[in-house]
Length: 210
Image 1 (cartoon, rainbow, N blue to C red):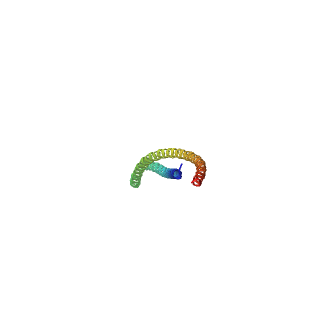
Image 2 (cartoon, rainbow, N blue to C red):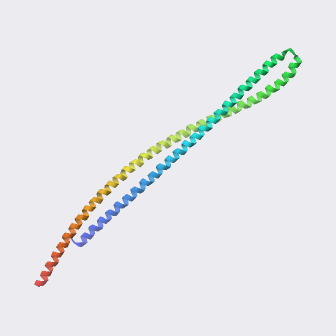
């Protein structure tokens, strides 16, 4: 084997090592990006859960307000019933009935107005709660979709980790093979040096004979 052939083999080995080094760098970069995307997906999922808790808390507040309004409505009903009892008791005096009845009529009218307002408020609250329910259902569907995507991303990251491990094992195997080649190259170099010495000795003898 000539010196040119040896240099050619050395160049080929160096090129292969360069390719393996670039593949390792690329695999490490891909694994790092996949890990970043997985962490971003988990953060988004936690934010979605926090928003869901806030919406549920608002719904609880609306339910409490609706309960309080229902209690007020029951109280107004009791008041009207008391007015009716008093009105029956004042039936003995027509004039007194008329004066007190006018006053009670105004009170009942005021109660009616308040009752109508409460009924409207209750209806508005019911519509609001229904809207919150729709939004909550939509948000739940979105969160479930994010969960599916996150699971898929986790699987992809795990598969990528397995691939990187495979690359690492292959790189270690190639490194071992290159080490063996280096040992053989050293052996061949020693043999070539010995041949060179012998050739120089033969040339020296030939020149001497000449």
